[in-house]
Image (cartoon, rainbow, N blue to C red; front, top):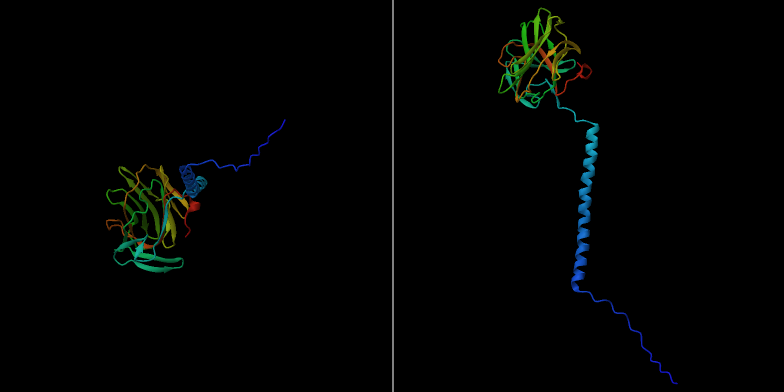
Length: 259
């Protein structure tokens, strides 16, 4: 029997046919992935920063607003221009410049309320009373522009002594701390502080608490600050003022500025 063998030549495998649309879709997908990668990274970075910031804020609460006024010139105080009455003078003291008031007609008006909106606050002053002034001397007067709410630092002076009188009025509520039992010699520099913690008003002389009392107030709105005299030009101050500081927090004596 004869066998017949037929040899078949091998053929190359042909690639599967793809429609042109498939190539376009694949290219478009690749382009979109490349385009979105930097956008995704950009959105993730601020989230990380925000979270870190939130953690930091939780650990370190934001400090309440505080500002210091150097009473050392007749051009501007607290970033505001001045209205000058009389002839207050800039004097050079051992601890720095100050402004002296003659007790008869010298005063400064600052067109700002440094405790505007504060529900708790501390008002500090470094000042020096001088002999020869009137008994009632109202030398720091902060008042709301629209209503009669106000805060004052005053002294009562007689002979060679003085004592501190502080006052806050808010609506029908008011409190005066008249420290008649705490007299001080006229002449030296003193630090005084009026502190309101939301429920109690206190005042201090050189870090020592003299008087306190309960008080309920609303916050003061925009207003002005008078130095050396009451806002309506009565009760002139004879002496000098060197520095004022206003803090929207109730400070303790350990936190007061130093003379």
